[in-house]
Length: 321
Image (cartoon, rainbow, N blue to C red):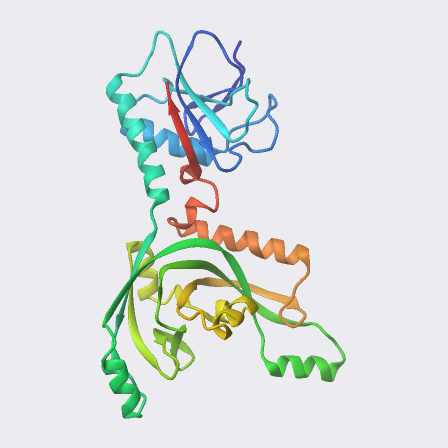
């Protein structure tokens, strides 16, 4: 017998019990729990964001919302899995089934893809006066292409040597600094540069440059995702290697002669002011900052939603019956 929980805005029926008269259409497996909690009890609901996404797919396939039942699998007791089913009397058509199958398979295909990025060098805009460097930069390829893959969030905390001196003078080890959210991205193939730096004018970002060992070359960066490109053009997000290049692992890699830039970070924005000790915070603060950073990234959409936040982009596999 069914136990119903109605969400009027979405108009979908959530079924928490099974019934032999149902015809299973598909099983969706996600890489994170899709429930509002972590146990399957009578009061538990599927997170609305997943229902919204499914409802949109059904709508585009011409399926009335009340036709498809979305429920947990009581037998497997798995909060990462959803079953789609219909009644025996009110099945979906083969055309409708093909439409929703195509939608799910596209999500999985998009999830496997990486983000193409192009670096367009502008050596003619270099401000450096030394002719040797300008001539060397002019001989470089004008365009480099690589693929970016989301790795993890990294939270940076800004502070200066002056902050450290003030702490020592005041006899304290803690001070305040601004935390900012970045997402580490791996590059394949690696690029023949040592860093990406943000160019500033009047303390405001105006562009980016790639760095060789002795000079920097102004560079235009083109991302495959138009919504991210628009934010990059407006300096709402930035690309750099500031955190990456300050890590002990990266320093060791460069000392060992394993050159080339194989990671960068996308700077997403400020997380506000935090108290820290030489850039370190306690575990609770660190966990909170990381989660807020993931949420900030997920709000920007793909490719971050494939590994962060809650949406149908967290789909891991699908089985049709």
